[in-house]
Image 1: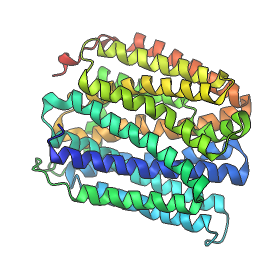
Image 2: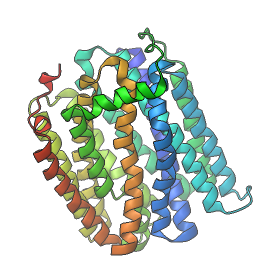
Image 3: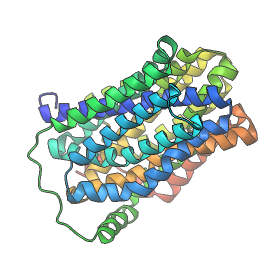
Length: 401
């Protein structure tokens, strides 16, 4: 895999684009809470991103399957760059009007961009690798992705502390521009895009495949509901300032902690892929994630909370690699863009909707009880999935190869 130059360039694109939007997300969270001191304002960040994401995702999958698999990803990266420059202007006070409104507008642009990034990566992943390497490559790809989740928030927090919000937004814009260049340098001999088809009929074909496949649907739904209820990342600025009483560097550490655990897990799974009892591993990992969220909420000290989040990243790393491998092995090549886009609606949107749910729950229940509630709901989701999707529960990856 590491001798495959096309795969390395694709990993470079993935790393840079994740660094760009994770750095932006960290700075936006700090910026908004600094302006409002309102947990609901943090939750609205997720809503501002998920609405345009929902509107664009299925059409993005269609475009990637039927047209260029590189140019849409490059254009999405350039949109992230423009959003970063917009936020620079907002932080500098150069744009009149409500700063909060402009921040939400920039986040909406991020939602549009991310709708195209996922299908681009999913389609190109299969184009640059032979099928027998999917499981190992998924582990390596997950590690790169999670490293971006480590470095992006840490970079955002350090930049806020050392140079301020304007510099942090500017660095995020530069990273997005570099991601676009990395993708444009990618040269592969991929199969031609799928023949043109009526757009809604083509999207419907992808939806029928996902909803007719118990394994694919079960894996996607499991992660969607677990992240929807169990994620607490949107509330970290409130935990840092009001519970642990740390500065912006503490926010970077907490946001990076889950990804640090996931990086180590992804590297281990790239070397030792889990092919037997894959379904049981997936269910156990998501249950472990829910327990870690409960542990984080109850942690009395900052570093205990960071340790709980790191363990949650270990569990999430297993879940991500298992789900990614299942998706790549189970999806027909001609439908990769659409199926990845539908997966994005399940998985990607659940992060943003989960942020909104976290904001509402924190407003109604209080900050710490809302996270305990979310972790408990995650455990219930795992139990329901195990009962409703027996094919997923009994799955070995060799059944799909």
